Image: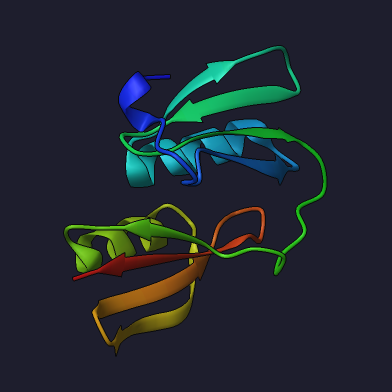
Length: 116
């Protein structure tokens, strides 16, 4: 983990449950370019430019937290989510400060992507 990612009182690591870690790795690599490091068969850590986290074996529980990702090109991000099997649950909409959409990944987690 790069030192420049360590910001005081900022979310630093996200951990997800997944029924299929290989499938989760494939989805997030293709959609967002995350890099993965496996730690045994039941855990993989991921690293993105501004986020770190991991996936462990377990049953996903939707609705407990909404992870929001930033995109420079919201249409491109939406199209990647769709083409790799994600489901759009709320199409792109405007809000004060930008626009966003929400989707579910292949484990059923709901996430959002926003842009200026």
